[in-house]
Image (cartoon, rainbow, N blue to C red; front, top):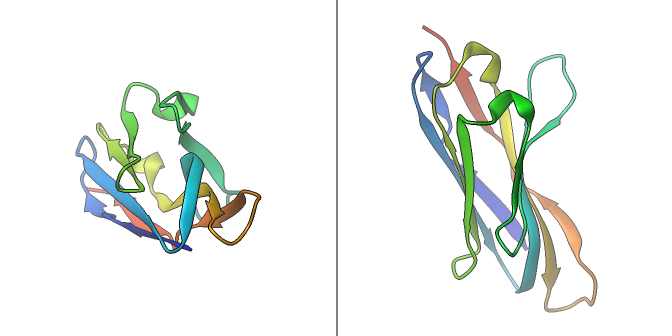
Length: 120
């Protein structure tokens, strides 16, 4: 099982980016999916989370600007980021709790990280 993230890049303040993450492999079921970020010199923090049923939660710093969504049929999660600010600059990681076909329990998986830079 692996997560593959894409969609990062350089954008001007006020701009938008869309991150995508696809889970692949011998997947039986996916529980929670989320996006985290880590800025230089800071700890990794949760940005947005979405349950298998579609309930969402956001960090206060991104509420009203970011939207998380998932496609359960395609095992994907996306993060639409609008009104980006320089303080959103970070490496963004996707996360998922996945039960593979080989095990009875859910395990945590991380994507490889994608850089988002907000600068003029």
